[in-house]
Structure formats: C-alpha cells, structure tokens
Image (cartoon, rainbow, N blue to C red):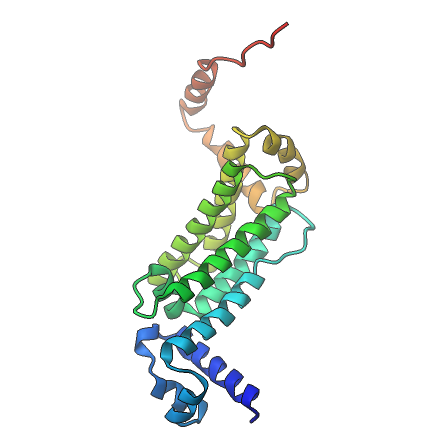
Length: 245
C-alpha cells in the first residue's frame, strides 16, 4: 500500500473497532491486528491511540453531518423523517462509540473529540434552519432547534440502552412530531415564524408525521371535560392591546 492508502486503511479499521466497542476498550494492538499490520507501523502513522481515535471520529462526524442533508422538497415532516432514518441508522451501527462519546464518560474524550461533536450539532442546526427558509431566524427559533437536537441525542442514547426498543420507526416518528410541536409552540411567540407556518403545513397530508400528530391532538378533545377546560383557559386570557389612534 502507498502511505496514503495505509493511513486510510488504519483509520477505517479503527473506526470499525471504535464503533463496536467503547474507545477505552480498544488498544493499538487491536487496531494493528485488525489491519494486518504491526504495532510499530501503527505508531509510524499515528503518535498514539488518541490521535487515531480523533481522526476516526472526525471521519464519522463528517458522515453523520452529511446525513442531515436533504433536498428541500415535499412535506417538511417527511423530509425530517428521512433525516431521522439516516441518523438512527448511524446510531445503530456506531452504538458503543456513539454512546461513550455523547455521555462524556469516555477516557478518550478531549477538546478534539468535543469539537467534532459540536461541528455535527452545528451542521444539524444549520440544515434544519435551511428547510425553514426564514431570512433571519430568531434566537428563540435557534434555541428551539438546538433543544430538539439535544432531545434527539438523549432519545438515541435511551434507545441504545434499551437495545433498540421501541422499534426505530416509533422513535423516528416521535422525534419528528416533537420537532413539529416545538415549532408550533415557538410560532405562538414569534410573528415571523407564525406567518411562515401555513406554508410549512400546506404540503402535509393526513398520513405524514404532522398529519398523524394533528389527528392525535384532535382526539384529545374527546376526553371528557378537556375541551371545555381548554376553552375556559383561552377565554380568560387578555386579548391584544388596541392599537393607538
């Protein structure tokens, strides 16, 4: 192999090992054996396990960030569902390494590894905002998106801990619907987002994640006394202040 080919091989082998086991359980000897190389050869390309771990993680981060890319066509909730399918596929195939890193308990955690995760989060944040297509997203909307990304991470860790139960489709649907619900709540406080909301919902259908969420929420109104209670709360709120003049 050429120098570049051998280096790429070592990174690929290391990433596979780090995906299958927490980084503290993977040694240089493990990487060398899996690559069919000697221990000194691994050290020839990398000064130690931390260096090869960070480079492997950087490659994995680039892959994960790429999974948030989605054409801006079709219902918003279906776009996000496809993104979540790819995200959960990555989580499932990189389980132990993903969990060790996000929990922050790995002995291999460092400023370098933290920077990779921050880059992935920023890429996800930017991609989601691009689908909302607002010229000047507010701080509140950006916070909503960041909180939802944190929710996706926490939900993924719980899903791994529960041995991928419930089924991936259920986790994906809940995450997408959580985002839609958070978007609507934010729109109640953000006039620019509220004005854009009808456009986001126009392409949705009864069978999309948004459609099934609305159906479920409408079903709550059949709960005895709930509709009246909600109506009373809404009626008791002060209306908008009259405009001057």
